[in-house]
Amino acid sequence: MVMDLLDERGNVMIEFAICFLIFMLFVSGITMTSFWGIGNAYIREAAFEAARSYAVYEDAERAKEKRTYKEIVQAVRPTPASKQTKILVGGLAVTPRFSKSAGADAYGADADMAVTKALSLVHS
Image (cartoon, rainbow, N blue to C red; front, side, top):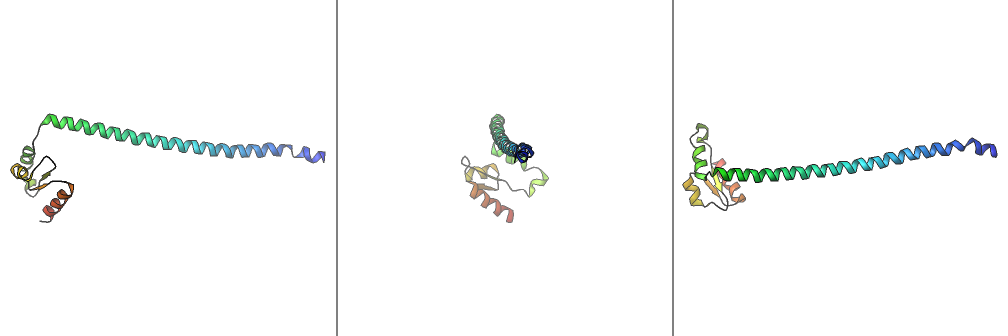
């Protein structure tokens, strides 16, 4: 009996070492997955902030240009490739009368109307 116990004393250490390795692999896997998720959240937030600051910067730069719809339409019209190009303007600040005076082919008050008008221009 005493001899049997002495023969198996190393088994407990080996089993503990194997279980400890499996446990540490499990813990490190959870940790790495957490870091990966947190890193993705930071990247997503950084991309959002970069896009937001770019949009604000672009609006400020365009405000400095002070171009009008009429100037933009007239800049597009003279090119030879633009003979078949249709110009659609719209938005809350634009009226159908203004779009005609600017030289646009169509007007869309909102996104749905703009898509409908654009499809009718393409298919006409």
